[in-house]
Length: 194
Image (cartoon, rainbow, N blue to C red):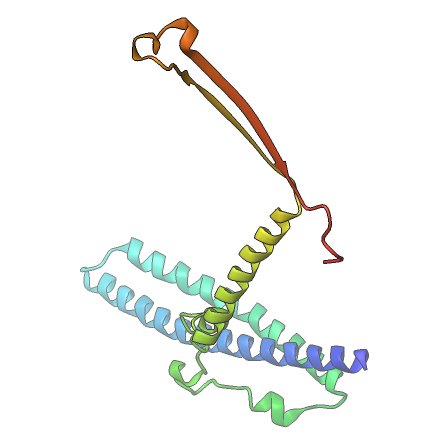
């Protein structure tokens, strides 16, 4: 089972590599045609005395570099075609010959699909039922934290400092100072198995 899946995966990868190489070869050949025209135009301008030798040399070197990049692409395509033939176990002429797009315009090639600006997970988050469930979950979490807090003892300390007197004229004297400290501890003793 795993061998079959791996083989199918390799066939698919090889097929798409073949598509990419065909497209690269096609574009390189079109680039060679355009650079040849540029070279001829620069050569004519130079022969007429309007152009300069540097432009002719640059056009010639760019054309030569582009021509040098074509044979490795064709070699890679041949290797991918051979790999596909080995993986399929026979010569898949209808597949391989169907891949040649030499006479097709550039917009003939399928474009990559445009991904949506919003991800599916973000789209799900916008649904009202999902938002309501999320709010319910947050409320339940707050309730759970409140319930857990009741299992711990609650400690409170209070203090009082001030003045106290029965007579108004002795209210702010040292003998009228008063203070009080108190504490409280509360906690569950029995929870009856909850």
